[in-house]
Length: 113
Picture 1 (cartoon, rainbow, N blue to C red):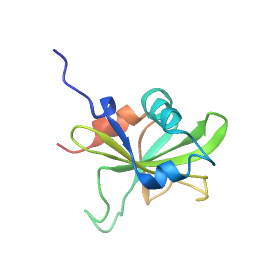
Picture 2: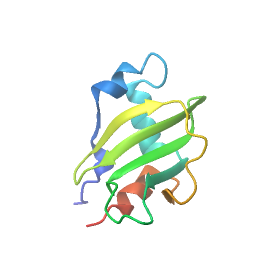
Picture 3: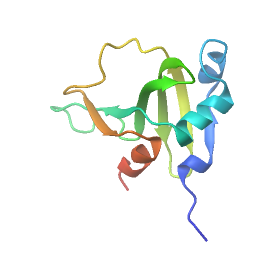
């Protein structure tokens, strides 16, 4: 028997669902998190350890022909999509963002035990 992954259960907040008419449908969001790749990062503060939640991530990419940022949280047994939005930040690279990989599975692996 294989252990369940947080990717097995993806929950979508009301906020993310309300944006489905502009961005991705719930089914597309789930497909994106399970099967697509992009730039996956989380906020960090070099001078303030513990300032940002180590379980909250952003995946940036072009999904279903839409340039998008999807903000999500990795819980022990599921993932919660908090919101989806256009790529309004100029860059998610630099000292305040830590790249953890290219897939949501990389984010799951980066969550501290």
